[in-house]
Structures are given as C-alpha cells and as structure tokens.
Length: 403
Image (cartoon, rainbow, N blue to C red; front, side):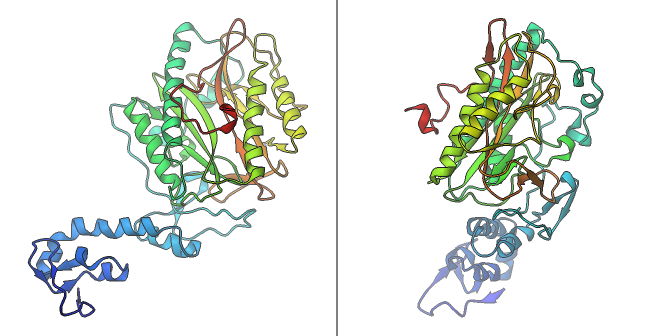
C-alpha cells in the first residue's frame, strides 16, 4: 500500500469498501493511473478484505488498454494474467512471442485458457483426449456416404444452429473487439443451443472457432488482438448437435476497408455461389475447382491449393475431398444424399501458404490478404440444398446482397 501523497489536502476520498475517509491508495491502481476514487481505502484491513473483487478492476483496465504500444508491451499485460502464446498445434504454451519470419504485419497474441463445456452437452470423442478416435479409421474416409432421411433431418437442424451462431458472431464484429471475445460469443451461443463447438480440442485446437485476419488463410486461433479499422476477418464455425456436424464460415469487413479488400471478399463470395450453382447429381467433384479457379483468376486473384472442402455428417471431415483450384484430380460424381462443404480460399497475391509456429495458422506466403466463404451442402434429386444458408434474420453486412 502506498500513501495518498499525490492527493491534494483539500480533497476528501471515501474508502471503496466501507465509505469512511480514506488516506491510502491501491498501488496497482496508481500504476495503471486509474481514478483515485475506486482505489482509495481507509485501512490495510479494508484493502485486504476487498482484494478478491477489487483486482478485477485491474484486469478490465488492462483489457481496455490492450492494443496500444508495441506487441510485446501489449501482450505483457495479458501474460501477467495467465494468457500465453500457442505452440505445437495447441499442445504447448509459451510466455514469449515465438521467433518466425513473419510474412505480413499480423502477429499472434496470447490466448486465454480453454473454455468449459457443461457435462450435459453431448461431446465428440476428441473433446477430452484431443484425438479423434472414430474419424481417421472410418470407411467414410474413402467412400462418400449417402445420408439417410434421419441423418439429413439432423443435419438440417444442426446447420441451422451453426448459421445462427455465426450470425451472433457477426453482430459483435467491430474495431476494438478481440477475436477471443468473438470466440466467447461462438462458444456461449453453441452451448446455449445444446451443441458442442466442433473445433474445440479437435487435434488439440484450443478454441471454439477459427478467426482468420487479413493475411491468414484459415485456422487462425482467437486471441487477445483487437480488431482494427480496415481489417477483414473470417469466422469459421462448426457445431456438433445430435451426433452430426454443421460447418460454415464468412469473411467480414471491420470498419472502413480498402477497395482491393472489398473486391477480394466479394469475389470469394461469388466463387462459392458459382460453385454451388453447378451442384447436382451426375456432376464431377473436380468441376467445382474449375468454376472457382476461372472466376478468381479472371478477377486477378489466386486460389489456395493446400486446403479443400470435405465431406461432413456424423464425421467432422470425411470423403469427398473438394479441391477449389483448376485441373485438380478429385475423383467421383455427385449423388443425391451426399453432404459436403465448399469453402474456397482466395488470395490477393500468390496462392502459396506458410504455417505459423502455433501449427494451425496458415498465412499467405507473400503477406497479402486472403478471404474465404463456406457452406455445408446437400445434393438433392434435382440440385442442391444449402443447409447453412443465410436466414431472413442474418445481419445485412454485404453491400452486394442489397444492391
């Protein structure tokens, strides 16, 4: 405890706990330059009795001031509170910013501890161990499943929840919000709907959704970085409910975004829409990449080749693989009852990617921006049903949809 020597003698402060005249000041509040009124105490006893609740004021101030100064100065505040950098695909943590030849201006920030899932929520087999048990050895890694009516109904329900969860995340996106806060919204909305956030602890992924900013192509880990005016951010949500998964993502504008980024995001959206428009029984899976590649290259952009769409249902990832680039070697044709994702990743510059030290975050090799959109689809007898389609209640965030 430090004396209140910096308080003018004519100023009378009251104890934050009991209201009596106060002559002592919380040293941490002084260090953080917080208002004197909230950190004034009459005695050491009052200060000690208030500490368990009073210390939360310090954390809130650190969170509100986070985002100023150098990355190391910003992150040191959170390291004091147990936030750490992620390493080894989520299996390790470190208090130091990892060394890496960063391709762009973005840097990782510390991440919070893993969010809890209530015991009553049905959980996939990786929820505790971090390692999927059924998925890798399933025959459905090689055979494209035709879903039963029951499976399709469950997927419709789950995909509807996933859409509502992503919409909830979209509503909080603005400058100053951290991607960890977005993850909290996704986690809480999923749990409230009775679902499990599929990414959580999947191969040790530490969070409940992926948030990919600017040059991040995919699988960005939510952390303590605040979104900045001019950013673009992709939020990738997957929900597990009634034993099946629903997967979708969208790229959002943060504040005022430059014209090239707007073109990139709209082109990526159009790539997905054009690909969906050809889905129907008898179409070869390889055709999806041709359609996407044609539109992206004509717009002056490139298509990521390292990641693809995938089958989905009772397994998070299974056959078929859906490449998004041209001249791919995907095998098979579409049949009614199949469910899979299309999720093109389109880059402003080169298509090649690099991996951050966390083992998850894929970034563009040249540090230029990337965008992505994704839907879960059902092949019907006559065409396609977009299971994760936008709802009338979905936020109106894309100018071209209302043009």
